[in-house]
Length: 116
Image (cartoon, rainbow, N blue to C red; front, side, top):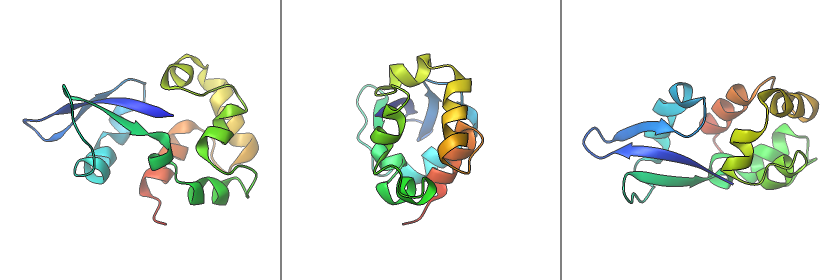
């Protein structure tokens, strides 16, 4: 499952994401992915399997889920559109039930700083 981001070639950084947590993770995206992503028309697609590696998902779900697609599939989130259209409360409740995280912001920040 990917997230969509706008990349500014002049500033060599990400300008925006297509969901509401852009400010909190913009800097982490700049640091982690700018050298590894191909850019076309200033849009990039970052696969959720890159952001949430299998080791991260297995560790933080106590091996209940093998990957991010399986984890979010439980709440019928399979695409970026699904993620954007799923109420935050449903996502956060799912995270609370199966991980130590209370919200998507914390889950994402931890994944972005995860070293496997």
